[in-house]
Image: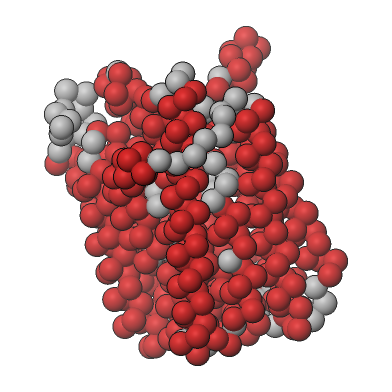
Length: 426
């Protein structure tokens, strides 16, 4: 028994799951811990403005990321023995992201100049955009590709924890909303600096300058993931943005708080998928039988695991809203209940989409599914939010997540993706 435990402890994938689990836990639980404090200190309207700004800037972060966390991770995992190749990938990705971040900043300035909502929140937006530039240098794909996430997690959690702790110390009233945004964004600026040092010291990846022909190659490799990321924006970060444009800041604050609880519940799924992804992509190209076996085990394990937070959300929505979030509005209970199946649906969607479809070579179909789901969510939001506010947004999100999970189940069964002798498209 002890020998078995020792083997598990030495397993690289297990260590990475634990490291990423702690990191994702901190990324969701630290902001979650600050919600009651911010709602009480800033008020629901100011917190709604904060959440609206964070969601909008998160969209820019995803656009700047371009899906490189998936495509570059795949390349690093496949060529990890070739340091020069990895250095070229790293330099190219950083150069492209810096260009996209600069273009994005120009777009933000245009929005501030011409859109009243953005103009009213101009100072908060400019401060929040710091995190976008910081994300350019995070190089998470390097650590994921080499399957060495422990040091990265320690740095990431430490930087974010400092920002949240300072939040409790210095934010005192509604006038401190700008300071709150700066402190929440500071971790996203400090951590990438440390990641860059770790990439050189721990992984031995030299710096280089991006070249145009390699940039075109990286854009081509990341395109399918970029399209899927944009589609994902329409039923993730885009929910708060659309709600902010069509409803009140208070409704935004209520939905954003409930959504953070759901994302915290889903966090169990994220580190497992991220840690297994490099190994799965390697097996997909070298050992088809082992790849299918891994997917089947992952599908069973994650679905059962995500039943736990789903049941908690279904059984104790009143405790979550009253005690955890400190929200007295009864609508929050119905929003939590409506979103409660999301953890299981997300687990199904991630394994069947991110791991199985991508590993089997169906990246284009994977992207198309997300785009269709994103557009459907946007249309539902436009129809339901004016009628039901935050509850309408929750109904829309649940409908789209269920559609996406069922679509991927149908695609996997129809194409025999869980059979080791199925054909892989060239």
